[in-house]
Length: 257
Length: 323
Image 1: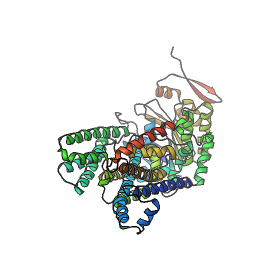
Image 2: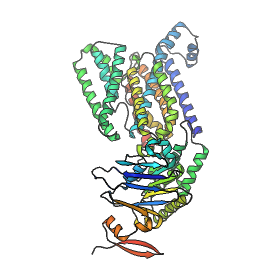
Image 3: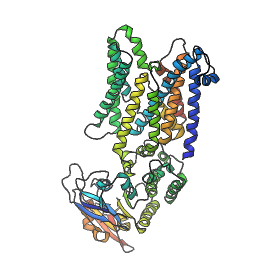
Image 4: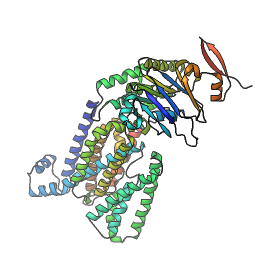
């Protein structure tokens, strides 16, 4: 696979002065988490890494090639993106939605085959929404929709997963099963790069972290080096208390008195 | 999925053929359905030959082509704007064509010049709407739709102004053009060929359109080159609309209602919906034109009135029934 690499990358956020250039690579088997307060640019970063927005400076590469040299189709065979919000202008069923994940792999003249449908159904089953196949997406709950969106990218089967708040709307059990699914993907040699709101999920499931500060500062590295309470307190502007569970840190916000 | 594409299209093709036979056979001298085919193959009396081949068949084919073009143009615009309200009429394209045509009529010109002027008007209207809505940023569906609606209102005012100042003897022709009238149509072949080509083109583009219907970002993430595709749709839809209004004046409603009715019944796979629109739009207009000729025969009604009167209740019923 071609690992995703940010080279001297500055994301383009209107009104923000030059931030610190980002320079990192997401290698096979790694799970990266991006942490930052609202408006720090997590989604913009994700979209820039997917080539959907131009960076202000620097470039994003897949292996040897810059994204700007690649065709959209080639990019989409290697990179999958789970969006934070989705628009469904026209009614579509759950199965149809998962099937569009096959789009990068089919030539313009090809129809979806039985095999494609099997892959889509398998992905839906894996996310526990297989029984909803014929339902219209617009009639589902928020959490079910989120799982359908993840199933679509699972059908797409990219080497690198980008996810924007994948645990949004999910109940505890499904949060864990989605994060386990991503861990499984990483173990099989793929890589995962996701924005997360929940500090503790990030501490528990990610092996690398990128902290994105609202002023454009950033730092990144192996999770155990990044999970420093003082750095996290500065990140969220929130006092934290650390407790230890099963030998791993757990962060709890301190109550203001 | 291919099996589910085939059956609805076959049904629509048969319905289209039946409507055309009915349309060709109906009129002041009726020709029974069995004989229509015989006459087309070169048999029958001289009167029947003239009646079918020279008078009715071209008109029927023109009606079919116009309806098909308008319905496909509407369906394409709805995907482009991801808004179910988009259609050539609402976006002011028909209005631009009407102003072009009426200007030519007002100047006392006829025939080819009216058609050419209508075509120019439609293209100008498209450029205006999409150019203004594009502005400095990108096309946002709601801004595009609003621009279209406002520009359409502007065309409406210009049309009223022109009607108010034009001499009385030109008014009937102008009004008929405004309400849509297939009898103006010349040769149906260019339009039919265009319609057929677009239906072929849609086969390889269809799946990309399905993905685009889920929003440009999602489409780009799944490997669609969004900008080139959007421009293709835009140019195609404008060309189809301009051809249709040039042939038959401004016929509202077909572009809005036909795609919707089909989506409610057949789902939203563009590979099925677009050819189905071509067939169903054509069939609807052939039937409407037949009715327009016979309801108060020997006088004729403008076909746009019939499409609206047929379309409105059907549409409301389907909407009421849908989930």
